Length: 70
Image (tube, rainbow, N blue to C red):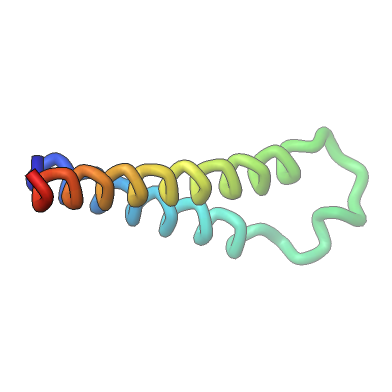
């Protein structure tokens, strides 16, 4: 169970890093431009990845705590 928790935390940390870097590398003035909405979709997907990463980290911590208390 400890190994599963560690794997979940590592995957969660990777998702958080990818999600945050995705939002940082967008052009600063993309909201002012009229376009097809792809960059706004990309920003929302980065936010979704970061939130999913937090869920994975939380699940990993729960797995480690369950293993330690058992």
